[in-house]
Length: 294
Ligand code: CAA
Ligand code: NAD
Image (cartoon, rainbow, N blue to C red; front, side, top):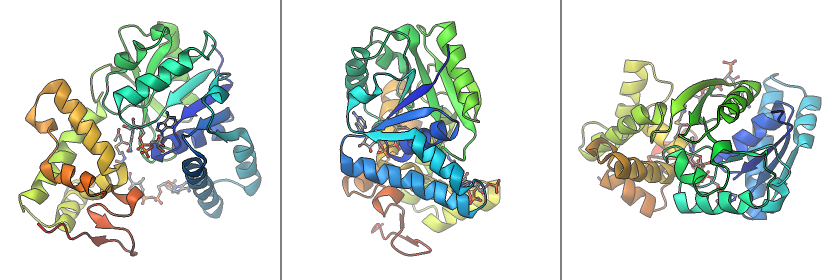
């Protein structure tokens, strides 16, 4: 099946990156947000990344203009109806995802493939809310989308071979390295990464070391590009909390249980870099460790 037009649901951290790389790869791309204000913020994130790319000599100004010409922002769900593939990157909440997919199901032609960027939900839960479970697949990108090479392509019990092959080839066409995954909560990467991140929060709670030293330990001791607490701020503490709850619900294993400190930080609006504050306070450059009163 040939894909010409790409739809993206959500223009947050992930949706903006996915929309950007789709337009960059030459696809006509439509990205939908809930209101103009959030949409504007997401489109600005894309423009800023491309502008930096021009400054770094990664692309020309003319290429940037072409990419932005292929990218259309909207708040109307019906503007996605003519897309060949739609990738959903809205909040990690099953009810919101089911609702948006079931609405789209009634609007899109039969051939349209639905894909979800969920981090932790099983894909079949969303596929079952539509009349096209055979044309439903997981396409799990990594943050920051324009830089991270991996995409997990997830096949459910109902995904057809043709849909899987099309999605796999589509991920490659975006310049990514796809891997095939089973429809198990967390797929490959989050199954391993989430317990590690949650353990880092438990280490803070238990006073094992300071936030900075835990980060330094994993950067310098294991060669990770970011320490776990910096990475948590980068992913979003709200999103991590939703993921932990979903994975704990699924597996009932203590390693996925959200630590109380995570819940408290989310309740306090400390969502990480996107809210300006998480384990670090981003109002200064370089960021300072947040006083959590521990
Ligand atoms: N345009 C084009 N290229 C750009 C760019 C731009 N605006 N900004 C950066 N780049 C390029 C750089 O030029 C560089 O490429 P080269 O190596 O070819 O020079 C590359 O991108 C890396 O950029 P930087 O050197 O500026 O950035 P860095 O070294 O500080 O690394 C990082 C930044 C890639 C984010 C790195 O810190 C990292 O890998 N962090 C870990 C990220 C991670 O683990 N993500 C996964 C999160 S979990 C997830 O996503 C799943 C989930 O479900 C929660
Ligand atoms: P985010 O909070 O940055 O963005 C979500 C966006 O979806 C918000 O801007 C919100 O306004 C929008 N939205 C909500 N309902 C919508 C709807 N019906 N239509 C269109 N837009 C809607 O979250 P994010 O970090 O981009 O995460 C999005 C999805 O990607 C989640 O499922 C998350 O688990 C997954 N994911 C996140 C990361 C990460 O590192 N943050 C990595 C991989 C996958």
